[in-house]
Amino acid sequence: SGADLVLSAAKVGPVDPVSPPAQPSPPPLPLPPWPPPKPPPSGVGRSLVVAAVLHQPSSGAWREAVDDVLLLAPGGRVVFGPGPKRAALAHFLRLGHALPPETNPAEWLVDLVSVSTEDPAAARADRQR
Image (tube, rainbow, N blue to C red; front, top):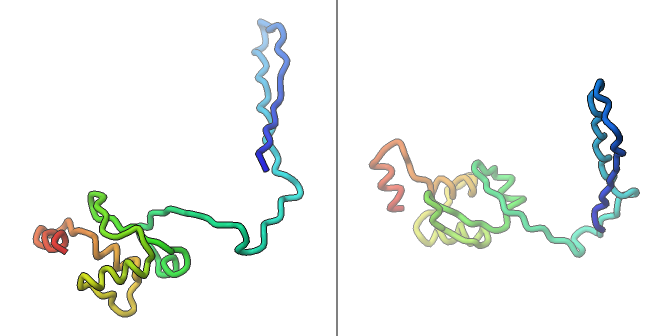
């Protein structure tokens, strides 16, 4: 269903030099349809694509909300993806970087592609990684 637009009009008459001109009232806000439309049955005919940037991802967000990953290194260089989150972990395992036990995968991936700005020697090692 489309959105409804509600407009109002104000009459304009002669201006009284003593009193300030009347300000037209703002148009009323459109009202949502009533009763609200019923959502389709769960999982039927609906899909939603969401692109989000997660700077401090929680393990719950990784587990429940993330399907695919595009991992960018500093400067916007693509390090992985886009692709399934399991494929990201497998990609870095093939490169010799295994996910440590009891570690948030999303946080680990961000740390893996981050470059230290505090220590020049660490920055060089980070860039080589």
